Length: 117
Length: 115
Image (cartoon, rainbow over all chains, first blue to last red):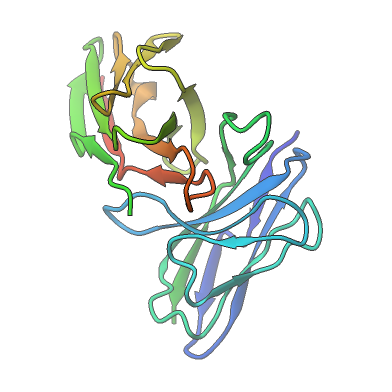
């Protein structure tokens, strides 16, 4: 079945450690997104990518990095510079970000919950 | 930072009740309004993408309306069932500027339908 796979489901980070969250999609979507959810808040955009080898900062990019070397994959690294990384992270994709299909919905993965040890 | 508000924050209804909740968003630079349903332990699922003022969309017992001039959308559920229990998210997409078409989400309305 087509969809978005996020791994791992749960992740623990030690102080000073970088961790990488995986996001893979087989929907052949051009655009991919990373969101963060904190209790009582809406999803906030960390980074997004419209095409391979291109990505843009969202509202809360500080302390995070991404890469988009393949269309299917958009990994998110939570660096040691992110002082409050404990949150639920959602990856999403859409068929197109700004082109002819720009009003298509986003499709989401099941999320990764990151906690600090 | 765009302000997207959803109300109420949570709602408890009995099976068979009809219910509705609200999403408020900026009334300028409108491009689209998305609604998603997010059930516990699952991924958010798209319900509607609405683009035109006065638009009404329906999916089974769920429907939504859109007023872009005053900046609100209503989501209605007719004859709520326990399986409708979920968090309902709305997301606003503005028409450009530096936003590059990204979605700004509300904090969600948590619906619990009691049997």
